[in-house]
Length: 515
Ligand code: XMP
Image (cartoon, rainbow, N blue to C red; front, side, top):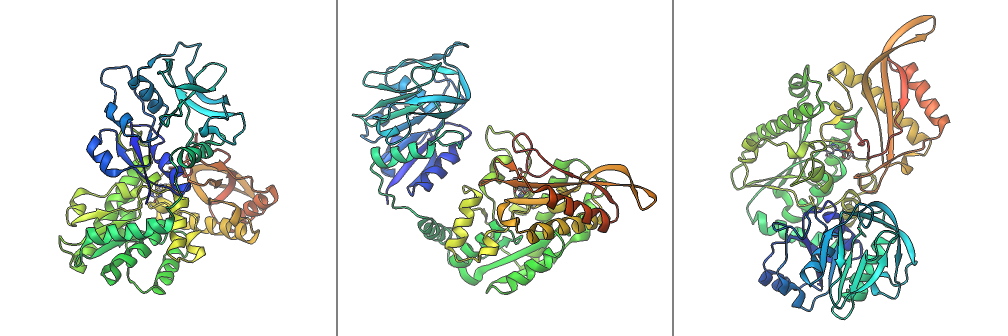
């Protein structure tokens, strides 16, 4: 199988580059830029991509590459920092851009030379997403300028003879028009990719890796929530180790209405060991009086680990056994990784070390995939469509949809309201058009009038978003009439709620969940 090597220089979008390459049906791996030359030779890539990164290439401590990489005879695409690094290493000159010349951030109109293989068959003009404060004052010998903007004469450079290409912008992000087509051009026109990689291959190689890691005796305990990610992982592990897999569903009492029973019923049909642990009291007592979102997340993450471990000890785990969870890439990146800021700690990143220490290792084979890739993998594994297309539900459950203190009473109120919201959305047939929708019980109370009496009830917020990867999202334009119907029903049927608002913020600047 042909392989592309992505050398990571610390940029924000590195996994997105990998994902775009996979979308083009080409196998790739992201490796640190420090990968030694002999390992690169062994890897035998058909092409190499240098990612972006936060540094300035001309500063003494910034990441560099061994110049021998340019003598491998392998095509290279440099993106942003990667482009500047290529220029710097091959004899060009990179400097800090003057404010009014070539420093560029955000959407920028760009003109391309469509005779260059990178831009073959693409429109001559388009928006590209820039994020660079440095400027290539001198382009190395042999390179042509193949893209420019009003401010910058050389946002794309190419040395076709050697197969070296550099772009100052980010083709991997959605904001760059035809960005994926540019990467496809690099892969197919420059690296001569044959498109020999599929999700089926990923599935086979992941099963083989899991088998090698787990060995012929190790058992696996999987933290199953019934959501897409852990269900897909359950299917993958069942394929890898058969009946040495046990799925443990920890019901923290903060699931949606009827959900615990539905998960149990769904998995009862599978030919796997399934255990449900009802732990509502444990979680609610730990959460009593807590209002801070990150503290709630940390308490739930830790308690989840302890409940899981109690079950595992009952089960008689040994140090030869593994703990698996369906962590996916957004969980990793949003919980803060390397230089990235912690947006919110996803529950599966909060396991207490003493819990982890009881197992041989933690298995998280999906932690580089995005949600829609997980779904494609689920289909590959033959999971039913209703499971594959389930909307995500966060590990900490309703605790992060109840603003302020979490109590059983509030959870019950939210469950009823959320159930009406979901029922109406489904009945109107709008559910298929939404990526995720749910209700949030705010901590705000306001005055209302019902019948002839005054009420002082909670405000409920409705949220609905559309997104493909859950890293960014747009708020959904649900018809007013439907919102009206939902609002009327909830206020009439759910005691304690007397006002409904609809959340019209996208991500960014908001996030999908409220906490
Ligand atoms: P945010 O709120 O960060 O959410 O925009 C992005 C997606 O992740 C889900 N989410 C979680 N999933 N554990 C999970 O498994 C968590 O702790 C968690 N927090 C948020 C959220 O529902 C959305 O789909």
